[in-house]
Amino acid sequence: MSAVDSLLATARSSLDRVTPARARELQEAGALLVDIRPRANREAEGEIPGSVVVERIHLEWRLSPDSEWRLPSVTADSTVVVLCNEGYASSLAAADLQRLGLRGATDLVGGFRAWAAAGLPVVEGGSPAVP
Image (cartoon, rainbow, N blue to C red; front, side, top):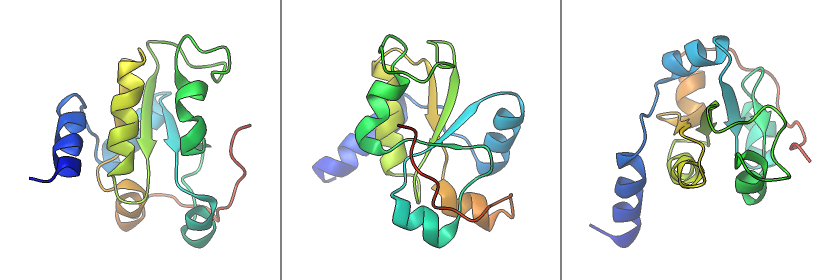
């Protein structure tokens, strides 16, 4: 196993990863879906309605429960589903958020592309990231 595969396996061992259908249920129950994909991907493929775009380089500061720069609605008890294109970078990001105290952080199995393939709602994308 390569070092990156080992890193990914370790990250995923702490996550209760969710399917697209489960992510939709969680979103409807108030969970925050956080899209960390680059703008070019969002413009080309679309976005999940109601998701929040947070650039990967800002993610820890915007979602760490004790960060002065966190999104106002985020607490240590928030349920947050991180998504990327295919569910790899999001696993690493969600594990980082858990280490920062966001106990309810997880990620979307298969990422945005699995969501779209499941026929779940998608809107034209390219939204700016949360400042």
